[in-house]
Image (tube, rainbow, N blue to C red):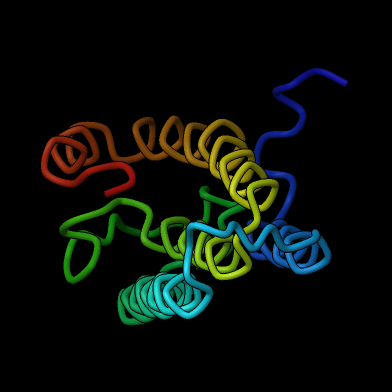
Length: 154
């Protein structure tokens, strides 16, 4: 299988759910230099942020009446540039990664942090870059201008 055959194939929410399950099954590290309550406080904060920013992204897409299915960028009818999309071009992916990172931090799981980094790298290579190629082709100068205003991640 060629790498480009993996582009836009795995639903990002399914990937995130599988990674979350894996992080939950990985053994906790409970590093002695990190207070468990502090780790969970930071972790829960990251998870709440992640869910919030992802939901804001979905809501903005719904208001714009454009597709929320990232496997089919050809169904996009406009570039959403307001609300959370004024700051980040990918709030749903930022949210997914934040949730995974929060879980890993709360569980003090170094393998969980590594898995979160792998998920972020996968999303970048096989989801975001192909989406951006399509959007650049479909919306041309409008998308290029938007990219100058809003960060890809944060």
